[in-house]
Length: 254
View 1 (cartoon, rainbow, N blue to C red):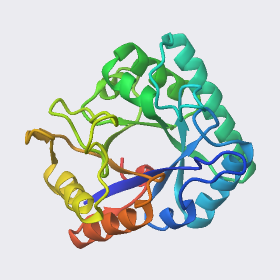
View 2 (view 1 turned 180 degrees about the horizontal axis):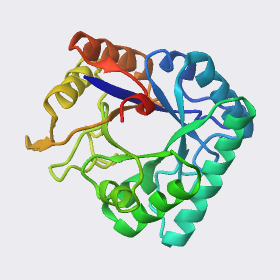
View 3 (view 1 turned 135 degrees about the vertical axis):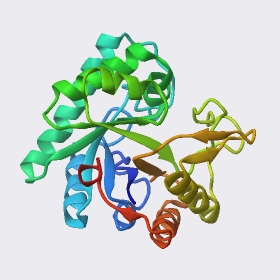
View 4 (view 1 turned 90 degrees about the vertical axis):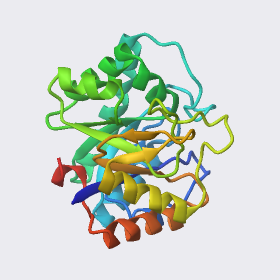
């Protein structure tokens, strides 16, 4: 069995840093780099691309609503056309930094509120899928397993990676538990590792009410902005490999 492990990186801004990106990169196979709308800036984008190249990790654009103050986690009311434009703009910026350093962009993943809203809103999911398709040949769309992203990618014949989360709790409908609720973020590395092995080998995850959700993830996300990120990513990788699961970037598994 093969599966991708991804993490959201490059989420500092100016003089501020968030997380230990270099350490996390030693465990994951793909990185989602902030493109300046929820976090990141040109210098951080360039530097994070460089770190990915040095670590042999595939690069993805982490596109967001234009909400730097709210870290992209506040719902916004934007038209599908606006969402398309935001995504094309951010993908293009990161793709240029990749090209400048001899790398290629592998995938695109929405961030925060845009990700959660589009997972349930087909028009927003369609806008993101269209932006990915129009932004370069071979780009992969990454989205929540069992969501509107699945259908949007299929409709435009876009290569797609269904995503599951190691460090987030699920509701019974397969959506992520809102961060405003207690227990929405998992901080125990051992618990996260056990959940991920279940996801990868059995295709299930247990929701907050005990419901067993069925899905087949192509990639597992670990957030890079939590204090447990380094230890958790390493623990998850060890657990997967001990279960016979090989960690590979999406371009080698889809």
